Image (tube, rainbow, N blue to C red; front, side, top):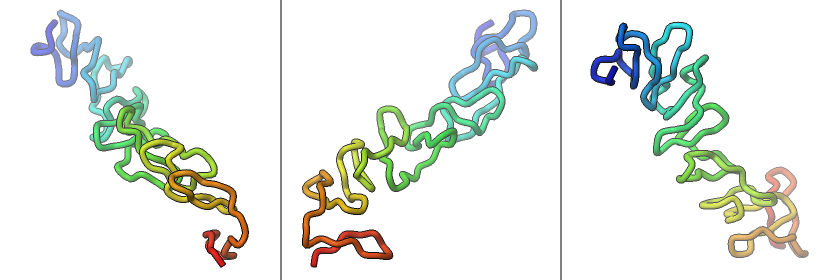
Length: 136
């Protein structure tokens, strides 16, 4: 049957029963036991069958972080707009922007030079409590 005749969220269903879905639209997950389509969490583009809040991909404006879609880009990652995923920064970047190697800050014992982290050369020292580099 066509989607107009199928139950909510169903892209295709068995012709004898509009409730028996065989395929779901994006944003829905197929439940093989009940032959229904269940709406994914509102930030998920696709989700797993067993848990509709366990995302496999995210809507635009959100990034996949494990199985959760978030709008927050946490330190140590950057939000890839092509894949809508959080990608870890390459060491020794502490934070990055736009790509994993475009550093915006560095881990201990490194300093930022342009958008790269380079070995800290004296007279740099590490502040004991913050781990931030400080020129002396």
